[in-house]
Image (cartoon, rainbow, N blue to C red; front, top):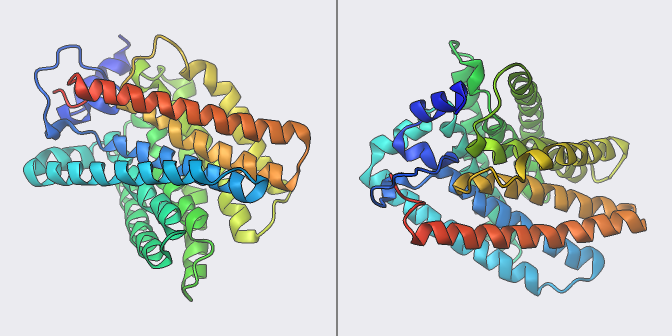
Length: 342
């Protein structure tokens, strides 16, 4: 085990071990150990539902798959919301420790993003519900970004804590624009500008800090390796946010899309290895990949060349298969007691 890996395991509270660490000595399942980063499953599934929905509108694919995945994503969100609510009521100290942890605390952004994506998934069926969820998600996201920046500017930060999870609050702010660009509220336009300003600059700063840490310090612990894929998210989510805000897929949008794709190619061999143990942390790959697939679908709809259409279609099918594997494996460690083990 590397020095940094040991540091991560030593500093993470028991409730935060599922960030990627698989405890080899489980002593019993408890809601106290429900990891907040499991909300990334809602993000990935919601993003996948949006991808199939876009494939339906742009390429005439059946909408059944989008509806089925969307319903499942909502079910997972409700289960996790109830579960984490129970954890908050029964073990508030554990939740507080998780929130203030320099690594685990950033994963609370997954709750905000889940709310925003659910607003897009459910807004198709009930526009009022969609606007309510989007408004709540927007407020939570901006407050979280404010807290994260305030904490970082407090000083005494450890450069080794600059892991890919740090970028989640910035991506969450960009998702406000991704999911709310068509909101009819009079104030929505200014909120979108605020959000893309906060999200883009925050993501850029965090991306720079994280890359500096990855280059100059020890590698991430093996169990945290899947979170590397989060680095793809700012560019692919930024692509969708930018095109939604401007209403066009121009060359700048293309630059964002292709750099995100380049990062995926670089990071995939590092992430998808047998030596990386499975845990809830593997869901970190789901939303960045869903964002890339959605960006590919949108880019291919504007530039409908055969290679781009094949890239978008194959990526959508591959993502569907990958998330199915994650669902099955997560259910497996849930029922054998490992997911909620102390």
